[in-house]
Image (cartoon, rainbow, N blue to C red; front, side, top):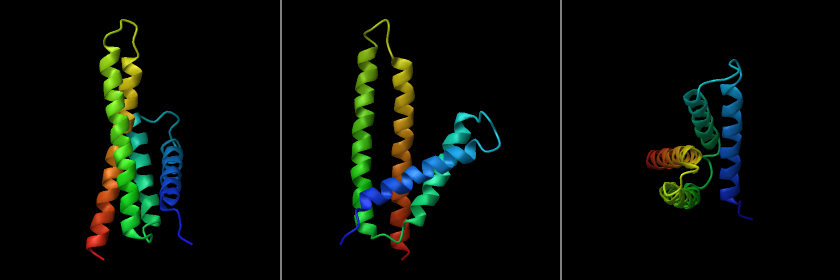
Length: 123
């Protein structure tokens, strides 16, 4: 029976996000956004490396899938932002925040993929 690697990767990412959020708020009630992002990024990376014994090729394929989906989400948000400029009462600020979050997620996925590729080269 083959494990569902995308499910395992999703669990690892979710675990890292939750742990990073908790750690960012552990000693500071309202940490700055960059501190939260940094802690989440660190913990997601740590969580992924805990799961690295997975088959690298399948994991890489799964990451490619998530990268493509995230890039499509980013493009969709970009189009929505451009469309919102046509309206006086618009949601550009909220959409821009969402764009930044999705863009950070995309960068995280690309970093994870790079770590895996580096791991594969040194194995």
